[in-house]
Image (cartoon, rainbow, N blue to C red; front, side):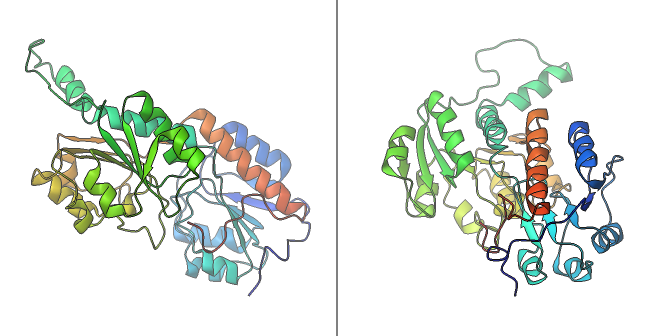
Length: 337
């Protein structure tokens, strides 16, 4: 089994690159200037047959989260495919084990979307308790009769306990923002942060996820999706949340058991939710759509011009390093989490 850490690739002159989705013009233009690149400028997602054809005849594939690069597709790939340079940080849509067995390097784009995703998370944390989506719909409906003392009452977030599940780059960026809103910071992470960083964030570590969920007023999730985190917030753990709690998810839909979440919302066992990701994207459970206390956004946590261009630059850096015969800076190993 090839170990790409020990044996970096040989130099590849003018590699053939296939990009599966339309990227910002500046990124696509740069790809075409640097490599023998085929861009998907129509932005119609490739079907399975198109992905297989691309993988059979390119050196580098640049997929996105919408492309399911499973073991069967990797097994059919041509011998020249040696790099899958993912456009995005999450790689749960790529079979890393199958890629490694074929000697294919996988890279991602960590770090560039931290601030954008943290901003979106903070927006959801504010908007759900304050009922901003409900208020906006009321104004647009034409039925609003003006201010009243009891109209559109929500809850303030200052003084509440924010439970952060996953305290990596994004979790820490959310903590910094949340402190400015007067939230106390609690977190669960597989590894405790250094004491200095905990002090800077004024964050309290919970060694047990169940304990964090039972203590928080607002829970926000920031873990990658992998076998260990799938349905991490399952029916049992959702039952640990108190009825006044709001659940925020801008990470990956599969981290939360969506059926259990809907059941809890319908039964009034949760105060509400803010969701930017879905278990079966782009399909959304109609029962969720019917919940007035759920703020829903279309997986737009990273959707800024700056973020998309920075992601493309990361992809280009990884391809250039690989093509020059070096190990790419953002190589993903099979045990990625």
